[in-house]
Image (cartoon, rainbow, N blue to C red; front, side, top):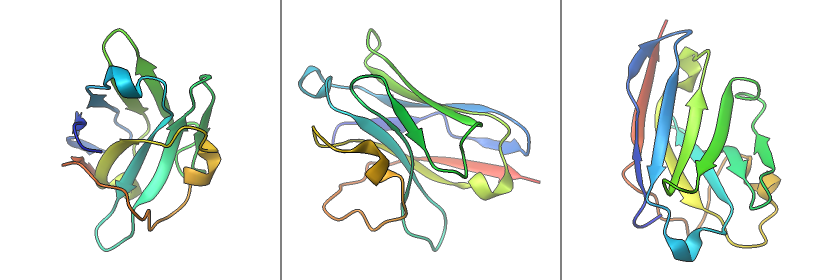
Amino acid sequence: AQGLVESGGASVQAGGSLRLSCAPITISYSRYPMAWFRQAPGQAHEGIAALDTDGSTVYADSVKGRFTISKDTAKNTLFLQMNSLKPEDTAMYYCDYLARGTTIRTMIRRGPFEGRHWGQGTQVTVSS
């Protein structure tokens, strides 16, 4: 989304960990659900993790148990902790707000996500 900046991507070996950040979450959007998406080369965007305003989370099967989405309100930042990384996690990662009232599990799918404006993203490359 406009105004959000993703960071923390890097090149790592399989089995490694990274923590992605997404900031700043503006006060106007502080009570909106949020999600992380990724896009591998030649593929559509994929919603992989979402966080609702009540703290509930949902994950794609491909990352469940390895990735954790969280938000630090004091830092106005959304995080994605990624553990046990695999080569198939290689992608550009993006964060975004979701519309209020969104059923967050509906975002856990492969795109397209029409009308969504992607930021610069942060690149994650996992080597075997």
